[in-house]
Length: 284
Image (cartoon, rainbow, N blue to C red; front, side, top):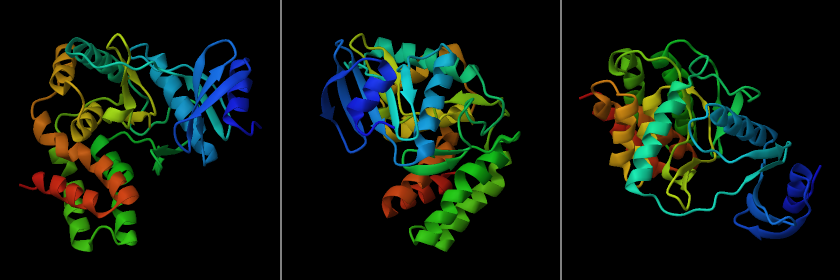
Protein backbone atom coordinates (compact mmCIF):
# COMPACT_ATOMS: atom_id res chain seq x y z
CA UNK A 1 0.00 0.00 0.00
CA UNK A 2 1.43 3.46 -0.89
CA UNK A 3 3.03 5.26 2.04
CA UNK A 4 3.02 8.82 0.66
CA UNK A 5 0.74 11.02 -1.48
CA UNK A 6 3.30 10.88 -4.31
CA UNK A 7 3.38 7.10 -4.20
CA UNK A 8 -0.43 6.95 -4.25
CA UNK A 9 -0.59 9.36 -7.19
CA UNK A 10 1.97 7.32 -9.13
CA UNK A 11 0.17 4.05 -8.42
CA UNK A 12 -3.25 5.22 -9.55
CA UNK A 13 -2.24 7.40 -12.52
CA UNK A 14 0.68 5.39 -13.89
CA UNK A 15 2.90 8.48 -13.93
CA UNK A 16 5.76 9.20 -11.47
CA UNK A 17 5.31 12.17 -9.17
CA UNK A 18 7.49 15.24 -9.67
CA UNK A 19 6.41 17.29 -6.66
CA UNK A 20 4.00 17.70 -3.72
CA UNK A 21 2.17 20.66 -2.25
CA UNK A 22 0.45 19.88 1.06
CA UNK A 23 -2.82 21.78 1.42
CA UNK A 24 -3.87 20.23 4.75
CA UNK A 25 -3.25 17.16 6.88
CA UNK A 26 -5.52 15.14 4.61
CA UNK A 27 -5.12 16.79 1.19
CA UNK A 28 -2.08 17.06 -1.10
CA UNK A 29 -1.68 18.46 -4.58
CA UNK A 30 0.73 16.26 -6.55
CA UNK A 31 2.36 17.28 -9.81
CA UNK A 32 3.09 14.33 -12.07
CA UNK A 33 6.09 13.90 -14.34
CA UNK A 34 3.81 14.17 -17.38
CA UNK A 35 2.62 17.61 -16.26
CA UNK A 36 -0.78 16.68 -14.87
CA UNK A 37 -1.78 17.78 -11.38
CA UNK A 38 -3.92 15.54 -9.19
CA UNK A 39 -5.45 15.77 -5.74
CA UNK A 40 -4.52 13.06 -3.23
CA UNK A 41 -6.69 12.69 -0.14
CA UNK A 42 -5.64 10.66 2.90
CA UNK A 43 -8.46 8.83 4.69
CA UNK A 44 -8.25 8.04 8.40
CA UNK A 45 -11.03 5.47 8.12
CA UNK A 46 -10.95 2.71 5.48
CA UNK A 47 -14.57 3.33 4.52
CA UNK A 48 -14.15 7.04 3.85
CA UNK A 49 -12.12 6.80 0.64
CA UNK A 50 -14.40 4.08 -0.70
CA UNK A 51 -17.52 6.12 0.08
CA UNK A 52 -16.18 9.27 -1.57
CA UNK A 53 -14.94 7.45 -4.65
CA UNK A 54 -18.28 5.67 -5.07
CA UNK A 55 -20.13 8.94 -4.60
CA UNK A 56 -18.07 10.79 -7.20
CA UNK A 57 -18.59 8.00 -9.74
CA UNK A 58 -22.35 7.89 -9.05
CA UNK A 59 -22.67 11.63 -9.55
CA UNK A 60 -20.60 11.46 -12.72
CA UNK A 61 -22.77 8.62 -14.06
CA UNK A 62 -25.75 10.97 -14.14
CA UNK A 63 -23.93 12.98 -16.85
CA UNK A 64 -25.47 16.14 -15.43
CA UNK A 65 -22.80 17.96 -13.41
CA UNK A 66 -19.01 18.23 -13.61
CA UNK A 67 -17.18 15.93 -11.19
CA UNK A 68 -13.43 15.29 -10.94
CA UNK A 69 -12.30 12.00 -12.43
CA UNK A 70 -11.44 9.30 -9.90
CA UNK A 71 -8.08 7.76 -10.81
CA UNK A 72 -8.21 5.20 -8.02
CA UNK A 73 -8.48 4.55 -4.32
CA UNK A 74 -7.67 2.05 -1.60
CA UNK A 75 -8.32 1.97 2.15
CA UNK A 76 -6.03 4.96 2.72
CA UNK A 77 -5.83 7.10 -0.42
CA UNK A 78 -8.13 8.67 -2.99
CA UNK A 79 -6.67 10.23 -6.16
CA UNK A 80 -8.73 12.54 -8.39
CA UNK A 81 -8.24 15.21 -11.00
CA UNK A 82 -7.60 18.76 -9.83
CA UNK A 83 -10.04 21.52 -10.81
CA UNK A 84 -8.36 24.76 -11.88
CA UNK A 85 -10.50 27.29 -10.08
CA UNK A 86 -11.84 30.65 -11.17
CA UNK A 87 -14.88 32.68 -10.15
CA UNK A 88 -18.61 32.11 -10.24
CA UNK A 89 -20.64 34.13 -12.72
CA UNK A 90 -24.39 34.75 -12.78
CA UNK A 91 -24.67 32.83 -16.04
CA UNK A 92 -22.63 29.91 -14.67
CA UNK A 93 -24.74 29.86 -11.52
CA UNK A 94 -27.96 29.65 -13.50
CA UNK A 95 -26.47 26.85 -15.60
CA UNK A 96 -25.44 25.05 -12.41
CA UNK A 97 -29.04 25.24 -11.17
CA UNK A 98 -30.23 23.44 -14.29
CA UNK A 99 -27.45 20.87 -13.99
CA UNK A 100 -28.26 20.22 -10.34
CA UNK A 101 -31.90 19.62 -11.26
CA UNK A 102 -30.75 17.06 -13.85
CA UNK A 103 -28.53 15.36 -11.26
CA UNK A 104 -31.42 15.05 -8.83
CA UNK A 105 -33.68 13.75 -11.59
CA UNK A 106 -31.24 10.89 -12.25
CA UNK A 107 -32.76 9.40 -9.10
CA UNK A 108 -31.84 6.74 -6.59
CA UNK A 109 -33.25 3.31 -5.73
CA UNK A 110 -34.52 4.51 -2.33
CA UNK A 111 -34.14 7.24 0.25
CA UNK A 112 -30.85 6.52 1.99
CA UNK A 113 -29.59 4.25 -0.77
CA UNK A 114 -25.79 4.40 -1.06
CA UNK A 115 -24.07 4.75 -4.44
CA UNK A 116 -23.23 1.48 -6.19
CA UNK A 117 -20.20 -0.05 -4.44
CA UNK A 118 -20.54 2.53 -1.68
CA UNK A 119 -20.58 1.40 1.96
CA UNK A 120 -23.61 1.70 4.18
CA UNK A 121 -21.32 3.12 6.88
CA UNK A 122 -20.31 6.34 5.13
CA UNK A 123 -19.39 9.88 6.19
CA UNK A 124 -20.50 13.47 5.89
CA UNK A 125 -17.32 15.43 6.44
CA UNK A 126 -15.74 13.81 9.49
CA UNK A 127 -19.05 12.59 10.95
CA UNK A 128 -20.34 9.03 10.43
CA UNK A 129 -23.43 8.79 8.22
CA UNK A 130 -25.38 5.56 7.77
CA UNK A 131 -26.98 4.90 4.41
CA UNK A 132 -30.01 2.81 5.35
CA UNK A 133 -32.64 2.58 2.59
CA UNK A 134 -36.24 3.56 3.26
CA UNK A 135 -39.38 4.09 1.18
CA UNK A 136 -40.91 6.99 3.10
CA UNK A 137 -38.93 10.24 3.22
CA UNK A 138 -40.35 11.74 6.46
CA UNK A 139 -39.81 8.54 8.45
CA UNK A 140 -36.39 7.87 6.92
CA UNK A 141 -35.20 11.47 7.42
CA UNK A 142 -36.20 11.42 11.08
CA UNK A 143 -34.75 7.99 11.87
CA UNK A 144 -31.50 8.17 9.90
CA UNK A 145 -30.65 11.84 9.38
CA UNK A 146 -31.95 13.73 12.42
CA UNK A 147 -32.44 11.59 15.54
CA UNK A 148 -29.03 9.81 15.54
CA UNK A 149 -27.28 13.18 15.77
CA UNK A 150 -29.75 14.46 18.36
CA UNK A 151 -28.93 11.46 20.58
CA UNK A 152 -25.20 11.88 20.16
CA UNK A 153 -25.37 15.62 20.86
CA UNK A 154 -27.35 14.97 24.06
CA UNK A 155 -24.88 12.28 25.13
CA UNK A 156 -22.03 14.71 24.49
CA UNK A 157 -23.75 17.41 26.54
CA UNK A 158 -23.95 19.75 23.54
CA UNK A 159 -27.74 19.64 23.26
CA UNK A 160 -29.98 19.92 26.32
CA UNK A 161 -32.78 17.35 26.81
CA UNK A 162 -35.51 20.00 26.50
CA UNK A 163 -33.98 21.18 23.22
CA UNK A 164 -33.84 17.61 21.98
CA UNK A 165 -37.55 17.25 22.72
CA UNK A 166 -38.25 20.27 20.48
CA UNK A 167 -36.48 18.59 17.57
CA UNK A 168 -38.20 15.29 18.36
CA UNK A 169 -41.57 17.06 18.11
CA UNK A 170 -40.66 18.22 14.62
CA UNK A 171 -39.73 14.65 13.70
CA UNK A 172 -43.14 13.45 14.88
CA UNK A 173 -44.81 16.06 12.68
CA UNK A 174 -42.65 15.41 9.61
CA UNK A 175 -45.40 13.71 7.54
CA UNK A 176 -47.39 16.95 7.78
CA UNK A 177 -44.40 19.27 7.30
CA UNK A 178 -42.60 17.58 4.42
CA UNK A 179 -44.74 18.84 1.54
CA UNK A 180 -45.85 16.71 -1.42
CA UNK A 181 -44.25 13.29 -1.74
CA UNK A 182 -41.37 13.10 -4.21
CA UNK A 183 -39.29 10.20 -5.57
CA UNK A 184 -35.76 9.70 -4.22
CA UNK A 185 -33.30 12.14 -5.78
CA UNK A 186 -29.61 11.54 -6.46
CA UNK A 187 -28.07 13.88 -3.89
CA UNK A 188 -24.57 15.26 -3.51
CA UNK A 189 -25.44 15.16 0.18
CA UNK A 190 -22.93 17.73 1.52
CA UNK A 191 -23.62 20.60 -0.84
CA UNK A 192 -22.22 23.57 1.02
CA UNK A 193 -20.39 26.33 -0.84
CA UNK A 194 -16.95 24.83 -0.18
CA UNK A 195 -17.86 21.68 -2.10
CA UNK A 196 -18.81 23.60 -5.25
CA UNK A 197 -15.77 24.75 -7.23
CA UNK A 198 -16.02 27.20 -10.10
CA UNK A 199 -13.54 26.74 -12.93
CA UNK A 200 -11.93 29.41 -15.11
CA UNK A 201 -14.97 29.34 -17.44
CA UNK A 202 -17.38 29.92 -14.53
CA UNK A 203 -18.69 26.34 -14.62
CA UNK A 204 -19.49 24.48 -11.38
CA UNK A 205 -17.74 21.28 -10.25
CA UNK A 206 -18.88 19.11 -7.34
CA UNK A 207 -16.36 17.65 -4.90
CA UNK A 208 -16.39 15.82 -1.54
CA UNK A 209 -19.87 14.26 -1.78
CA UNK A 210 -21.77 12.40 0.91
CA UNK A 211 -23.90 10.97 -1.87
CA UNK A 212 -27.12 9.05 -1.24
CA UNK A 213 -30.76 8.95 -2.23
CA UNK A 214 -32.71 11.75 -0.58
CA UNK A 215 -35.04 14.70 -1.03
CA UNK A 216 -33.86 17.22 -3.59
CA UNK A 217 -34.72 20.15 -1.33
CA UNK A 218 -32.02 18.96 1.09
CA UNK A 219 -29.18 19.84 -1.32
CA UNK A 220 -30.74 23.24 -2.00
CA UNK A 221 -31.25 23.92 1.71
CA UNK A 222 -27.57 23.27 2.40
CA UNK A 223 -26.52 25.70 -0.31
CA UNK A 224 -28.79 28.23 1.39
CA UNK A 225 -27.45 27.47 4.89
CA UNK A 226 -23.82 28.33 4.26
CA UNK A 227 -24.28 30.67 1.34
CA UNK A 228 -23.37 30.28 -2.32
CA UNK A 229 -22.41 32.88 -4.91
CA UNK A 230 -25.38 33.98 -7.00
CA UNK A 231 -27.70 31.66 -5.07
CA UNK A 232 -30.73 33.43 -6.51
CA UNK A 233 -29.54 32.55 -10.02
CA UNK A 234 -28.83 28.95 -9.04
CA UNK A 235 -32.40 28.63 -7.76
CA UNK A 236 -33.79 30.37 -10.84
CA UNK A 237 -32.04 27.88 -13.11
CA UNK A 238 -33.26 25.00 -10.97
CA UNK A 239 -36.85 26.24 -10.97
CA UNK A 240 -36.75 26.63 -14.75
CA UNK A 241 -35.63 23.03 -15.20
CA UNK A 242 -37.59 21.34 -12.41
CA UNK A 243 -40.09 23.52 -10.51
CA UNK A 244 -40.18 22.96 -6.77
CA UNK A 245 -43.36 22.37 -4.79
CA UNK A 246 -45.12 25.30 -3.17
CA UNK A 247 -43.90 26.10 0.34
CA UNK A 248 -40.22 25.32 -0.31
CA UNK A 249 -39.00 28.43 1.50
CA UNK A 250 -40.87 27.43 4.66
CA UNK A 251 -39.33 23.94 4.49
CA UNK A 252 -35.72 25.15 4.20
CA UNK A 253 -35.09 25.07 8.00
CA UNK A 254 -36.58 21.56 8.13
CA UNK A 255 -34.01 20.27 5.64
CA UNK A 256 -31.25 22.23 7.39
CA UNK A 257 -31.77 20.27 10.61
CA UNK A 258 -29.51 17.49 9.34
CA UNK A 259 -26.41 19.58 8.50
CA UNK A 260 -26.90 21.74 11.59
CA UNK A 261 -26.98 18.67 13.84
CA UNK A 262 -23.92 17.22 12.09
CA UNK A 263 -22.12 20.48 12.81
CA UNK A 264 -23.40 20.36 16.40
CA UNK A 265 -21.75 16.96 16.83
CA UNK A 266 -18.51 18.09 15.18
CA UNK A 267 -18.17 21.70 16.28
CA UNK A 268 -20.30 22.34 19.33
CA UNK A 269 -22.86 24.48 21.03
CA UNK A 270 -23.28 27.31 18.54
CA UNK A 271 -24.71 24.97 15.95
CA UNK A 272 -26.98 23.35 18.55
CA UNK A 273 -28.65 26.71 19.09
CA UNK A 274 -29.11 27.12 15.32
CA UNK A 275 -30.61 23.63 15.05
CA UNK A 276 -33.14 24.34 17.80
CA UNK A 277 -34.04 27.67 16.19
CA UNK A 278 -34.59 25.90 12.86
CA UNK A 279 -36.81 23.33 14.56
CA UNK A 280 -38.90 26.02 16.23
CA UNK A 281 -39.73 27.61 12.86
CA UNK A 282 -41.55 24.36 11.99
CA UNK A 283 -43.67 24.49 15.16
CA UNK A 284 -45.07 27.97 14.67
